[in-house]
Image 1: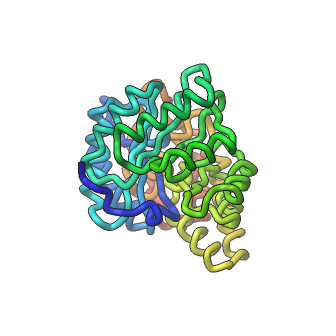
Image 2: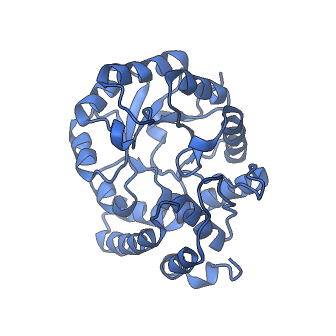
Image 3: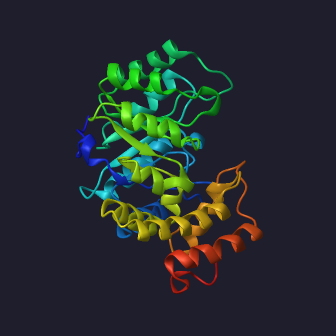
Length: 307
């Protein structure tokens, strides 16, 4: 297995979750994927996540996930860490996907709890992550996103404290308080990442080690500027960027926000591609709604006319 090129402490800042560009036959467009990786790097991202929720990782086969992660790692090289997403419904499947990407040089795995209908319970969830850690010697970021299998603070702390490979938590579901609680209770070496798209500014101000959320894939450049402003304690600039991001997120947020995010990428010359069914494509109304707030963030001159 290839060793990670970056330590957990190197996984910080703005970490966009790539979208997966599909062609008209719903096959992966690898040329577009490489161009997207370059776009994210050129916009100043500090790392890249492949095969996460924004990348429709739940709809990818093991072979497809490996191919996407491999392509991304080759394109990125030694410039920044790459994290591989694992979104499945059993420990066996999680180990299979984790092993499939383990030799590609990824710096960590981003793994959700199981998400089909029920909650296994605290001990079974602990065993799920412990078994993955035993099977694959890679750092794990626990992606706390499943509403009916939501992991509370005490269980998250247990997972990080008792499974050394669980290096941190990606906190989603709009729960700013849980993220704030983690920031004051987790050990200093543990990494807390925000995935609360409309509230990046307060999460950065609270000291989150970075963010992995869909708005970062849509407009990585403004998100990097927000991160930099907070680190510099320039809160006037940070609040201005935050307000622009919030307006854009209001236009993106929907049941098919992956498709709308891809359209926002396309408007900036980044090939987002299509979605994989049953996720519907962005509607004409959604496409119109994102243009004005996007132009306010990146400049009208950057937007393509045809999209």
